[in-house]
Length: 270
Ligand code: HH2
Image: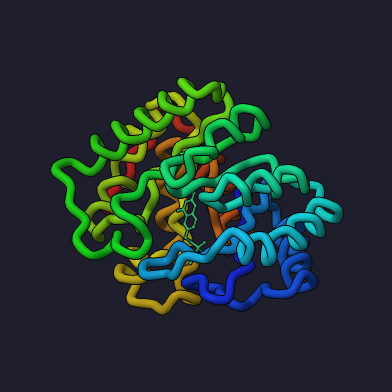
């Protein structure tokens, strides 16, 4: 369970809530107490239409929080960034995972940094960029195309000296995807886990869940739990979530049931 710590003024669901180091640290501690295994810290929103920030502003927001969390919370820290200079500084401050939503396409220096540091890296699929991605997403076969992209990025990473064991894949829910694309990726999530790498799913409170449950962003916890239950049934390894306690409970129940299955559990239409 990867708990989200957004130290941004403008994230889509919790922007502005954890701006000071004290607020951020207190939230990290709370997520640890609720059962998080990883804290994912991000200082630049990637919501549709978000404005990019430069590395100095990202570092200003991020590094004091990374240092404080590293000192006080005994969990691996992941850094949600596409910039190698930011990732490098965060790794020096204790981060162990680089969560790069551009799959190392934004910054030519990122692969060398990951290779040399030995950090784990999340390679995420996105069609377009956060500024443009929801304008007209288009696929012939979204699951096959996302799988092909992620395999290509994993091979490119390994060609640059990154070990296979450092790589985590992520289909990028909501990043250049229409409602049907997000639902197809969840319905066939086993095709992602069959690729042979750990797979991360970031569905928490996203718009495609809001559209199904007709709820604003703060009221999407039960909807998120439904999506997470399916991802667990289909073999997900890491869940990136805002609501650690309730998602931990969801995972505990679904995992316990699957452990008792004599045949593979099917998702029912009920
Ligand atoms: N989603 C968001 C941000 N980072 N990283 C990965 N690997 N996978 C995701 O699905 C993902 C991600 C968007 O969510 P959030 O951080 O809550 O919002 P914002 O980007 O507005 O800060």
